[in-house]
Amino acid sequence: MADSHVATHSALAHHFDNMEQQREAGSLGMWIFLLTEIMFFGGAFTAYIVYRNTPEVSEAFVLASNTLDVWLGLINTAVLICSSLTMALAVYYAQTETDSKRLQITFMILTVILGLTFLVIKGFEYADKFTHHHIPGKTYSFPAAGVLESKTQIFFTIYFALTGLHALHMIIGIVILLVIIRMAAKKRFSPEWHAPVELFGLYWHFVDIVWIFLFPLLYLLGFHLHGGAH
Image (cartoon, rainbow, N blue to C red; front, side, top):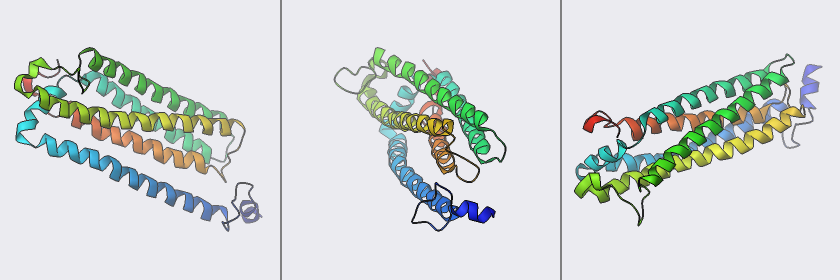
């Protein structure tokens, strides 16, 4: 009786035999997508590591890195770890047999709030870079770096590229999550079908993990040199 119910679920696409097959196909698709994302960010990470280990550029990276606010970066790391926890709880309550729709929605809303908190803090960091003319381009200025001034632009170019891409992924994630929250409010999910919540959880955890790598690379390497942050 239960198998028949699952096999005829309204969310079952016509080209799948049953819900389990559909769920496995969705998971496989998400993992393939995440693999392409890993390769995408991997290229940018590689560029950073190559420049960071180039003798004539490494010193400039230390100087530029020490202008970043470690405490704001640390707070944002804690914010994202908390958002991973709330998203994991949302997935858990989407899977449970009990009537927990309100908790599921609550934890997804908390995830959105934490995601927005991260972006606001990142916005303050970007504003600080703009104020100090640390945006690569014609108005760029870093006189404290002396002869290394031009090379510090390489660091900030990679910094804005990596953190900007990460922020873009977060914005896209928040928009998708708002759609999923709307679906949950309409009682579209059940223990038999909650694939959007589960697959989005994988995406959100991936975005959080990317930041876990970004924070030490951009903020902490060389922090102990030159007296730490400005």
